[in-house]
Image 1: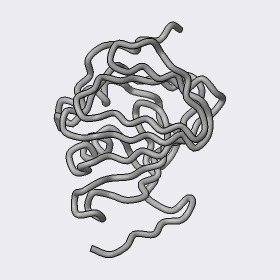
Image 2 (image 1 turned 90 degrees about the horizontal axis):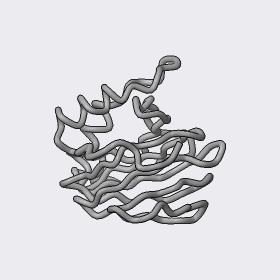
Image 3 (image 1 turned 30 degrees about the vertical axis):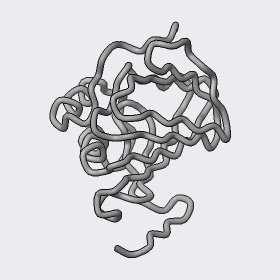
Image 4 (image 1 turned 90 degrees about the vertical axis):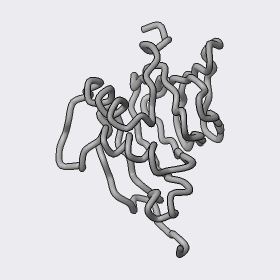
Amino acid sequence: MNSIIRHENEGEQRWFYGGGVHVWKATSEDTGGSLAVFEDTLTRGKVTPVHRHPDSDEVVYVIAGELDLWVDGGEPRRVGPGAIVVNPRGVAHAFTVVSETARLLLVLTPGVKVEEFYRHASAPMDGDRPVDFRKIGEAAKATGATEILAPPPFRQ
């Protein structure tokens, strides 16, 4: 395996059907399956259902913006630039973007199975696409890398 160097805006860009644009910085193929890394650019109101990754740990670093984060039945907590969130495999979590925009760096380990979920639940950047949670559910069932447990826990 060789070193991986990708600069800002370098990497495959994909539209995620849950909302947001992923820029893949290191794929599981690049890393021999040990991890996968992508940057996620999101807009206000982006929300996730309560979910967990049974086979992967997830590290989220907030580059810019603010999120309300819900973890394993607790009260939502606000996180902003410079915050890091570590979701161990199997821990239920969800978030919503409360700032105008947000940029996150996600590190998933091991990377193979959970990257399959994100790729199944996204499409190449070739124009605007609508948010489609049905496709997210299909990807979760097809890969088993994400389990959707409940609707978003945030007040709208």
